[in-house]
Length: 411
Image 1 (cartoon, one colour):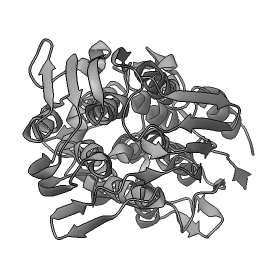
Image 2 (cartoon, rainbow, N blue to C red):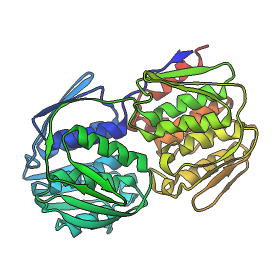
Image 3 (cartoon, one colour):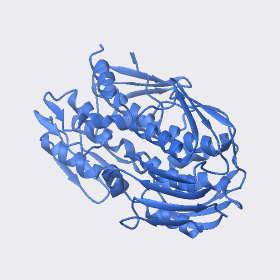
Image 4 (cartoon, helix red, strand yellow):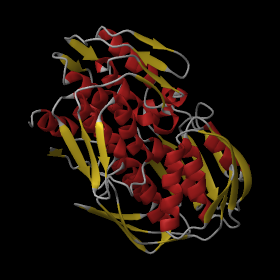
């Protein structure tokens, strides 16, 4: 059995940075993810006037409940969707003029449901070029609060950003959701808000957030479940292999740990304890039809593993993967076809037929870290796979290639 220490969760780290910045007092984050996305978030906080001190294994953030310390700031969000969506929302609660921009990749990704909701709350913001996209100017003067209706069918991050804003408003927020994707990520948000002292309640499709503010604390970041999926998939693929990820067990916040339930349905042996999760190959991978709406970040992992199953693998209800770092449905289909695999796709589904992937082939990554890490699993059984942009894994796991290669060559 191989034990793999997975870096901290990107989703948890980003939320923790927001909550720490908004809290009264100094928060210490233990084991935060160190990657392009999270460093970009921390640098964005610094640009806004928050004091962030980073040391190995711990980041310290001095909270400012009244909002950013800077009256004006230019914030570059890099490729980070959490940075690009959370920081303008945080800044709106303060007082000043803040300009946000992002990479070409992030500029393509939608913001409109979030920015429209902020406008409903009275926030003065303007899109600098294309409506509903970065760049974005926020002229902040605090947020009174109130009630709004939100469509979070493209991204749960819109709802998360507004929920985290709620305790910073003068009167609180009532948010009624008409559609919601990746709901387990919202459960992460709610649990973390409460850990920082918020009073948030869910009544059906409505979330009620009281204007409590937040309290600083020491907060440990759990391993990233999405990143763990590549190692779990690799263990399920290779006969005689098993992998354990400590710190990601029955108490985990992240819904993406449910990916191991998909592997169990396919035939892998799975054990989840308080201490961690273990996946072991049984030598068999069955085909299946699976709805991955709630764990869509692991869709590429399953797609890359799918050719090795004994029957077709059909993944449904993942339309939102078309507006991630790239169109992940089409990217997975494109690359699997390059490897000689039969693939069919629709607006929100992909069906992959059994086959033997054949190289050599260069994987078109579209600058998407999850495409690289997913097809590293395929490469375990397919000599000659290369990547046109292997370095884009820096977004969430800069050391991925070394760690995965070490794992692959460990008996």
